[in-house]
Image (cartoon, rainbow, N blue to C red; front, side, top):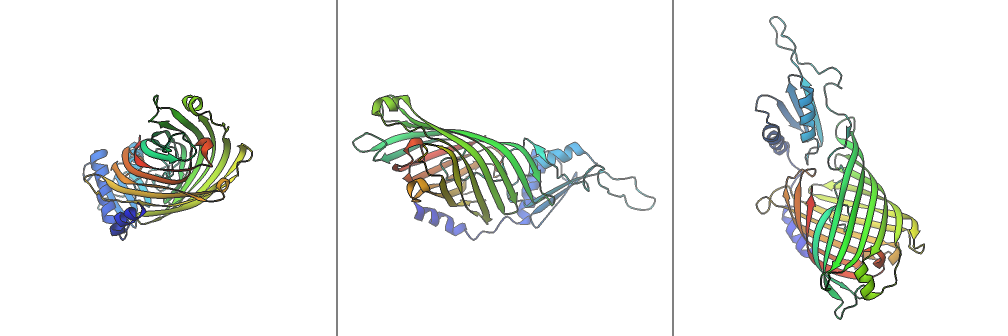
Length: 368
């Protein structure tokens, strides 16, 4: 599957970031079709990835609407929105354009409460990211399951997301800080069992602090996880239960490289139960996000995520996803993703963290 992923993205790897002309057309479409601003009622220039929108008339409410619609457009490195009323013309001279009083040169660069989305894009292939998905897999384990083949059809679901609390842009408009909250439930079901047994459920809740500046982004996150076995699984297999629960802080650093993103970091677990659970984990990965439609309106996405957990002697566990994204390319808008998925390593599920597992299947992700 790794070879297929490389073959799929190689022809497009040389594509450059979006040009100013592309961004000019994309922003124009949002202004005219989403905000209903006719041509001639605004001035737009895009230079070196930064868009400047001039709104004659001094309408600060319109200034806010334009900022809300454009500030998270993928590919924009900076955004300046100015509402500038025209003063009465001087005798024999042209009218003067001046900034609105009370704003920094008339530029919309203020912090916002409850922003949509995040300035750090969700890690595509990490199976424990706060997001909503449904997945069906052929799942194999020599320890987790008491079946002759040790292989079952598994349904795996996740419900969760990130809620932004406050975002403040950098002074030059090319980056932003954000604080938020996230939460998720991850559950796995044995579809071969008579009652589709719930095997395990993991619950997470966290506080992410994120930052982005041009092509660099970062996420620092403090979170809690607790894990619980399903009743049917307990009754059927009588496993020795582990009360897995801990708090942890994690750090990921990412760098955009054209249509690729390279990231790395790790986490450290605090207040661990069981106390024998080792604290350290390293994580790194590579992602590819196409900007042009591949099939109709679908854009190619692919990601490889690798974790090296101290609890398993730093041996790697690899997760791979490749598929298509449908919907707006703007990450804060609704979209749907369809992936082929594969995993080889130690179980990411609850008390089974020391068990080797493999799975492959398909997954549908939802962004609301």
